[in-house]
Length: 141
Length: 420
Image 1: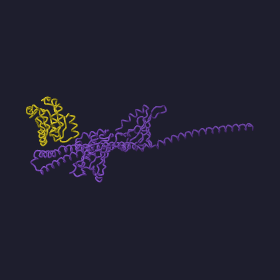
Image 2: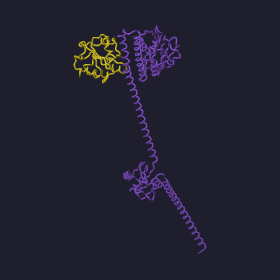
Image 3: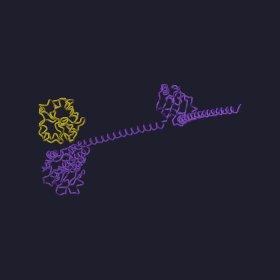
Image 4: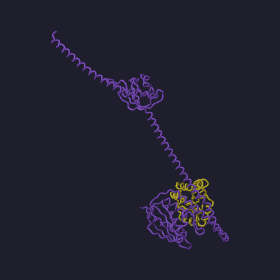
């Protein structure tokens, strides 16, 4: 299913990964969900470096769900890095965080986040986001 | 000699004598006049000498080689030398080693006929101590106008100098104290800023880390209910419901506490806020308000106020939620929103058809964690109205409620009007 595009979830909390997977299943979305557990892994994955060098196994996603409170590199810094990469600058990123903070919302908007969602994710939320995401054809991989 | 010639001779001699007397008297008068003149001149010189002698200032004369030629009592008082000790010695005797280079320059200027006025410098007493002086040095000329020496008037300015030094010192101390004060203010401000930053960091962590386990517990309880609820009996499901309600309540408590602390310390800048479109927007767009399908009647137009818009939105939506929540079960909430001018303020009122608050409870209503109605009937954290009060008070406004405890409540907030 990789050719239909994939979605990358950047989330360090096991419980939140569980709830996301469950909502994902309930939303009946066919795109596979890849998961990385911290900000550094997110950067490595998107850059295709280290253990993520194999793009067949770790395809460049067409959509990212990004937690903000992450080990090593914070979510907003990951987002800033993404926007600084020419091949990723158009990549839709949805912030999925546990709290709605004014300053985070502001910064996320500045970095052209597609949406700012507060956990827990619901199946409806996921369907809305995935349906409005660009088709994989439009994203370079 | 015949008598007539004798008489004639006598007469002639007598006349000669009297002429001589007259002559002598004339001479005496002129001599007396000269004596008086001389005495006056002597008096004048004496007076001048007395003035010089009794002056407070040192009055010294020296020749062009710098040798002291005269020395008054003032000089003795200031420098400690008696006239007989110093006359004939060089003025360098009076100049401290580190100021000796001044004298050649002074002498050079005197030779040119210059006068030196109020030259402030340091001289040395007989006992070796230093004295601050103000010098006036003028050339002395002989009858032909040639400079032959100098008069030197030295005024002891030690006291004035000490005063000046004390003044300078005091000024410096003041400046240092000011600087210290400024530094302390800066330090305090910095530590205050740090405290606020830490507080912000803390509440940021609370909102993320403290809520995560609560969300997890609630989430798993919901999953359990959805996927395994059928295997439980009614009692088991009831307990699970209670876990979920407890978790939800905990989460709301954390969120409301954070909102309260954010409202308390957020920086607010005040602008004109168009109340009328703002209230209509809140009523139409807030999902929590729309969910209970209330009848909301706005008696507009509502006048503009001076406020911090995000805080005002928070206050108004909390009041609306409150009005909607506290109705008898099965009753459709009805809210009438209106505003009136009260001197320089605008009072915005929310009249509801809810259960009301008895006057004896109204005092506690806006306190933190205060709940008037039992939890099982009406969910709430008891923070909502505390947030309203904090927000409104920070915007220089006030808040209150009127209710008889039977026929609904009239909550109001009052804010500075935008138009006088």
